[in-house]
Length: 425
Ligand code: 3PG
Image (cartoon, rainbow, N blue to C red; front, side, top):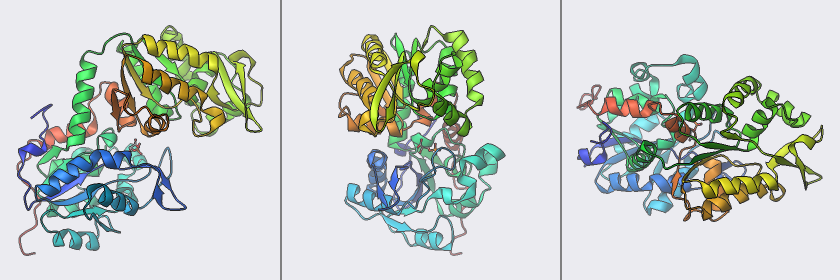
C-alpha cells in the first residue's frame, strides 16, 4: 500500500463487479458529436484493459463537461466508441446513469465485459455548484442517489480519475465509504510522480500560469508563494491581465469589462495584495498583443489602446519568459499565454512551449489547454511529465490533501461491500 491507498494489485477482480471512475472529459464538437481530443481516454485505457483482462465485470463512470467554467455537457456515448477503438474491444454504452436500465445492464455483464454509463453530471448531485453549495461530507455523499443505486451491485470501487481528484463529488468520494477501494494505474502514476517531485523540487522552480481558470490560478499562486515553493511565476492570459490591472497598468477597457463580466472582479483586490507582497517573484508581461481586423498588433503595457482586448503576451515578454524557463531547474505549466487556437495570437504560447522543449529543466505540464498546446507544438516527447489534471494538479501543488485521496485512504480500510444486494433479489 502506497500513501495509505490500495492498488489493483491488492484485489482479485475475477468475476467481480468493479465500478471504475475515470476522467475522460474532453472538448467535444457539438455539431458532429466528435471528441476533439483523446488524450485522457488514452491515459486511462491501461487500467480499463487490465481490469477487463483480469476478468472483472467493469462499470465505468465518467463526467463530460462542467457547470461552471465551460458548459459542454454532453453524453459519454462518443467516448465509448473511442475507447472501444483504443482497447480493440467492445465497450458497451447505456443512455442511463443509475436508473433501472443501467442496473439491468450491470446485472447482465459477463466476465471481462466493459460498460460505460452516461455522463454522471446529468445528475445534479455530481455538479460542482451542488458540491460548493451543499458541501456534503463523504458519509453524506454515500447517501446520494448514485451511490445508493449503484453500490449494492458492486464488489470493488477503483478511482482512476486523477484529473478530477480535487472534486468532492459522490462518484469520486462516496463509494469509498461502502466499498473496498483502490486507485487505478493512472491515478497511481500521477500521484507518485507528483509527490516525489514536490518532496524536493530542484531550484530555481518556475511556475508558468496562464489561461482563464482564475479561481484555480489564484489559489495555487498564493499557496506556492506562501510555502516558498515558487521562485518565479510567469504570467499570461487572463491571470496576467488581472495582475497587470492590480499593479496599476492599463489593460484596455474591453479586457477590463471581460474581467467584470466573468465575475472575476473580486480577484483584483486579491491580486493587489499578492503583487504587493511578492512582486519579486511574480513576473508580469512587459508587452502585449491584441488584434485589429484579425491582424496582430503589439504594444508595450503602458501603451495599450483604450478599446483593445488583450489576446496574447508580446514578443519581448516571450523572450524574457524563454530565458527564465531556460535557466530554471523545475518548471510547472498550467494554461496558455493567449488565444493560441488562432494564428494571430499564438506567438506567446508557442514561444513558451518552444522553450519547454529546449530547456534542461524538469518540466511538468497539466490541464486540457496545456496538453492541447503540447500536442499542437509537437512537444509531447520533450516534456518530462504530462499530467492529465489541470485543477487537480493545481490543488495538489497547494499541498492540501485532495478530497479523492482522503476518500481512497478511508476506502483502503473498508473490507466488504456494506450495502450488498441480497442474492436472488
Ligand atoms: C478537468 O477538466 O479539469 C477535469 O475533468 C475536472 O473537471 P471540472 O473542473 O469540470 O471538475
